[in-house]
Image 1 (cartoon, rainbow, N blue to C red):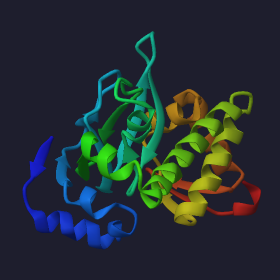
Image 2 (spheres, rainbow, N blue to C red):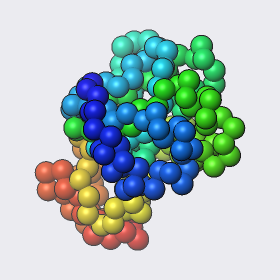
Image 3 (tube, helix red, strand yellow):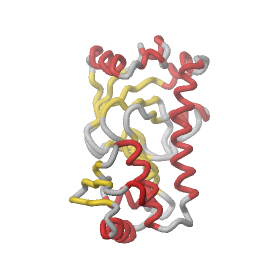
Image 4 (cartoon, helix red, strand yellow):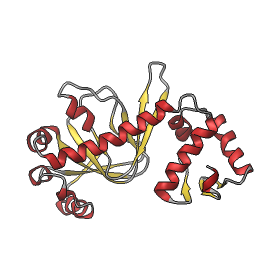
Length: 218
């Protein structure tokens, strides 16, 4: 992880995302821009967190290592997702529940936890922003839990509907291993489900580029 010491770079992202509309000015003044290389972790599981991070460029993968050493992918995050919001609101002694790593070269704004507590905890606009991020995480977690008894193909269909709503008819799939972990299925089940949707002409797939041919059949 490398700190980028250019105040104008921080200002660029503050302006781009209008961060001053939901971050207190005093808190924004403590922001530092952090550059992350691909596959580098900004947070590791079961460690104390000293910063709140806001993704402003790139993509992050949130994953969890279970007791058997298996990696479970929770979600893929894009700007303006937050890392550390749950732990900071829970309390100073709370350890991180997951590992967060960069899927590509990424940049994040970091805010010291002490500054978040001093300037953010009593600011209703900032707290609403925190809550909106937490609600998205809760939704992702609930989707994972409620799809335990659903077939692999239907899990994939639900995922594709969500991607269609976000990106339209054409988008790039996550790597098979990552997507299978997110859906709670095996790579073999994922490949079989993709092949079936291609066969019935619901989607077309070339390499990792997926095109939805008939959204009504998802």
